Length: 90
Length: 466
Image 1 (tube, helix red, strand yellow):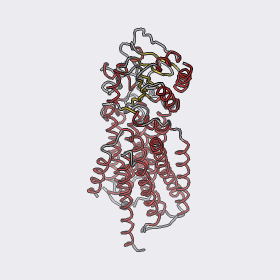
Image 2 (tube, chains in turn blue, yellow; image 1 turned 120 degrees about the vertical axis):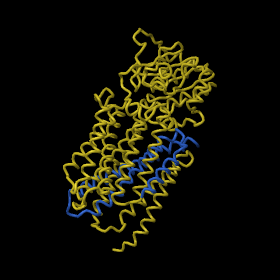
Image 3 (cartoon, each protein chain N blue to C red; image 1 turned 30 degrees about the vertical axis):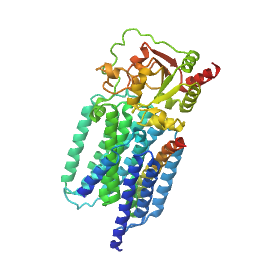
Image 4 (cartoon, rainbow over the protein chains, first blue to last red; image 1 turned 90 degrees about the vertical axis):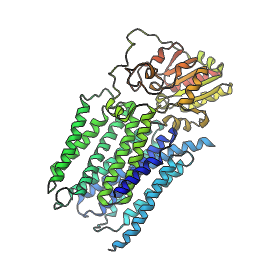
């Protein structure tokens, strides 16, 4: 697992090494959407919860809503920003 | 249940990770950015499908709850992303980020609640769950504070005395608490609650002393925290895509944070500890009475008309006034008169790096018209008029001249080198860093007071008349 962590961090550094300033905001926003990957955990959590344990289910539901808002909103807002860059080229 | 099926799911998750990597890579190049974003989103969608159906040792389904959550979250996310004003984008990103942190925190709470009581001391699973809780909690409240500061309902005057020490004590307390909890044979829920409260408080005390002008850096840093929290949550489930995705964001977010600090010529530590306050120097030399020269739209429009070269320096004021379209119109009007018009973009102008680029792109300002800091500074000495629209700290000569100033050392746009500088501003109030700007009192400087949009409108109108 530790190899995986080191490799992934290294990749993360390498990937964005030469980002032009123009793209800092969309990149931050896109990366922010990816950090919503915690949605996977929220899904698994609910699947593992007893169907009668309403407290846990509710907490899980809140987690899914929060993570999903992060994911969908993050990607949508990034797309909106980038859309403006495209228009200008025409 | 056939657990050997899991291998296929592992492979699927690997494909998602590749989508993330290629997506991020794409996002770092203007040509491929949009495709990159779509790629990353596709990876996320695929990962979610896999998570819905991957074999679990204990599976109760509960799909109703899951789909309800997905629907509600998608609705809120889409609606807010569509509705948001361009100027409010940094705030929105900050809010989204806080939600991601909150999700990690909630997962950690649930997993701690059902943690096996017989796990024994020094359990690795327990450690990663604590981390997910702590980092997620900081990211949650920290992002909310950053949101509040950007929205302007939390002012920088909200000063915590000795916040440096409070933060150090909280951090030490957390480490001690986690260590103690781990050493116990059974998990004490009181400790979990205390840890949760500390992490929420820490997020507040961590971000509050940092000045509003530094919020872009803070959001980027909190973004990498959210990534880390997601990675720790992934370790709870041994889920590769969460771990890798989280670490990718954590690492790239950290690097982006450092890049932003470099653009301001400050270290990350300086940003975090420094806290651009109102106090601490910078006011030197302001005690004596100083007079500003006021410009009026009619005279200025004539001057603009007969200039050879004009450079526009946009700042947050342009964004607030939603004046990007009028600004582009003024630029076209001047161009029609044969004036060479360019824009000088400071790397940290606005509330987010690239903020001005996005804004001007929305108004269809051609990309080659945008000069970066270095090129702009070469052009200023031969420029007839510089129009500073709602920018302040990025053109403040104190960054070069006054070692006592909190922004000392930050590279600035040398607007005072131009033959004339006209500053469009609502009032004489200080910029976000809370410091006065000597440029306003400069020999070649004049002020055009008023809202950026109406001032620009007036200029366009006057140019038509002249």
